[in-house]
Length: 232
Image (cartoon, rainbow, N blue to C red; front, side):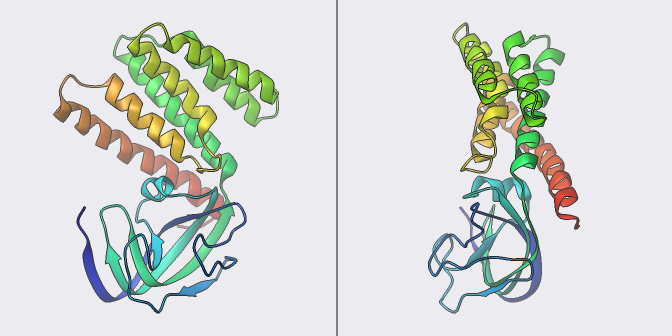
């Protein structure tokens, strides 16, 4: 992990997630609203002291404590890491509850993985496809929580047939795990598992596919979040 001390710098635009109560995660906890400007006077320490954000939404999602998404400016002194930065000031440009957006994003991730398997000549188990379809119907209010749970259980059952089926069932399950307390981070972890299982015969090939898929995910996620927030 490489960190770079930036010192005093111009404003920097990024992404940050909050818990459902819209409070900052660490003490002293504060209510966050559009226009909120938070300050940190202590010496910055990555992951410990400072106001954090990520340049890419997909990276911010990995650290999300909840489904509230913020478009933010980092100001003042700053430390940059590979996937996040922390600064002495953070201003909230826009804020919204992204719960439903994250559910939709997880469905998109699962469908993308399943289509890639089909294109490669490895037809996914129909129960995995069904899990995503039922999830989308659940989002529209057309099925109950119990029906959704049943579809998920069926997809899990298909995973017992083979290692490849397990990866495909995981794709279907990704649509169920997003936008919970982890704000979709679980869906990203499942997606990483799918990549490792479904692509490439060598580590280098798998990693290349992984990074390409991650970049595609980020473009999709940021497009959805910008639409939700009504900002760039």
